[in-house]
Image 1: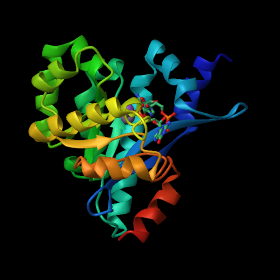
Image 2: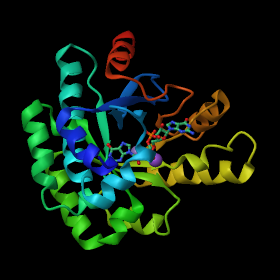
Image 3: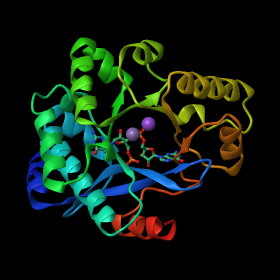
Length: 254
Ligand code: G
Ligand code: G
Ligand code: MN
Ligand code: NA
């Protein structure tokens, strides 16, 4: 079997699973969200990371059924945490260009919400600049539809595309996720500190919730707090982890 054939059957057989990386509010110190990240428990190759299969899923179109499963599972799990009495959080799901241009996306999202019973406000779609710019007009319409349903919309990897400011100007976003390349060298790069500070103010001015990704040190955290960055995500706070582990973490911070 080719990897592609295995992926097709893997989706049907339940060989994929999600890990969750916590997002913390910097002021309250509480978990306010999680990013869902897909993994593949391959029958013979073991556990594969997105870098090893998302490209193939996108080229082949299998990202559409895989993304549909991710959406359903993320909503189901988040609703289960809520039903267990844990603090409600927002669950972020990555969306590829191929999924975004698929005519069935709204139906898939709606189905995931209905089947899980989770309110739309607890689901966030993470969209990249390049995805949005590729088909800007259609993207605005689709995003307006999602906002009407009540979803949150994040621009992911912000700052590394060629049209960051146009994206902020044109699209109905709720969140801005600063790409981790701007966070990595904060402890010793004065220019990066200026850029990060400016992105946080820009986002705040626009009324967006600003999330810093890839926070790995206490020093980075302190700097971001001094910039009044609202939310942080990164290895310093927690790596992507199993649903079971994440549920326990959420329980401890009730
Ligand atoms: O999980 P990891 O930390 O290796 O994620 C790498 C990248 O893979 C993420 O930044 C994201 O862009 C992509 N990715 C992870 N999970 C998903 C998913 O469920 N759907 C899509 N389309 N991309 C994902
Ligand atoms: O933005 P994107 O969806 O590409 O980001 C998710 C990816 O970032 C995942 O692969 C996740 O494992 C990775 N990631 C999360 N936190 C950190 C971090 O603190 N440092 C680094 N290097 N990668 C991180
Ligand atoms: Mn992401
Ligand atoms: Na990102």
